[in-house]
Every structure is written in C-alpha cells, then in structure tokens.
Image (cartoon, rainbow, N blue to C red; front, side, top):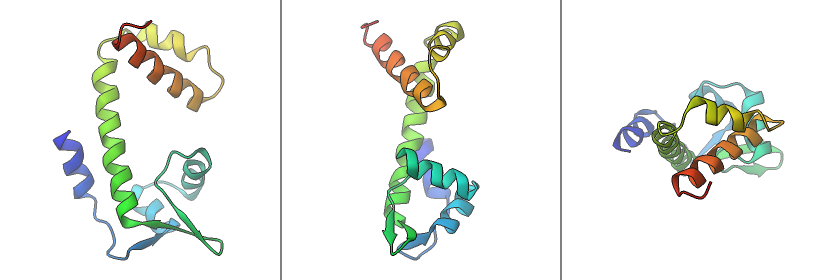
Length: 116
C-alpha cells in the first residue's frame, strides 16, 4: 500500500484548486473520450459542472488516484488465489466489460470469504 501512495504522490498535480478536464486527461495520459466515459459510468474522480465547464478539484483527484491504487493492489493480491479458468468462466457470463469487472470482484470477495 505504501507503493501506491508514493506513486500517487509522485504524479505532479497543478497548483490550481480546480483543474480543467483537458488538464486531467493530459496528466493521466488518457483522451477526452475516456474522461467522459469515467464520468458517465461514475468510475472517475469527483467533478463539478460550472455552467457547462467540467472541473476537477485537486484534492478529489489525489484521493481518487490513491483509492484506485489501493483497490488495484487488493485485486492483484486476491487474484493470485484463483485460477485463470475460474475467472474466465465468470467473465464469459457477462455482456459488458464493466459488468464483467463487477462480477469478478464480487466473485473474488465471496470466494475469499468462503461464500461461493
């Protein structure tokens, strides 16, 4: 968990309290379509709409990056416990990538707790 915190701290964030959508996309090395997808699906950092202009607060972005790193570490650690066949079987029963990811995470947590 220390590594993810250090990684989040290593990303240089602009000094301004509010960041434009374009600035965040550039900082994360993603395109604007991906930023819009994150907002649409509720998977990105918190954002605000100021008369049609999307803005992100620096603190919200820092928190999202830290949380995302911690979740990635947790999933990586739990995934080590299961075979690729078990996970692939879960993925094949879903239509969209987001549903598949949600199903796999639920499957992993239930399996880890001995519920499945």
